[in-house]
Image 1 (cartoon, rainbow, N blue to C red):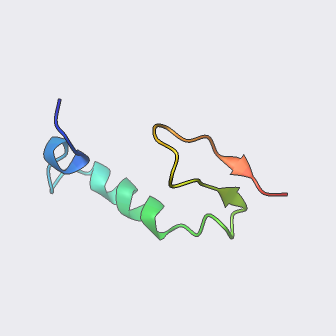
Image 2 (cartoon, helix red, strand yellow):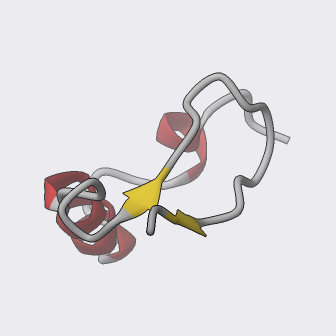
Length: 48
């Protein structure tokens, strides 16, 4: 298994468009709290 996404997904792979889109989202404005210190697949918690 590759050590990182960069090794697994080629630079010309269409999935990079999704990655770019997600990186541009403002999760706070969407009221989604993401904990960057949590390891693994994080849940999305709404901040109400």
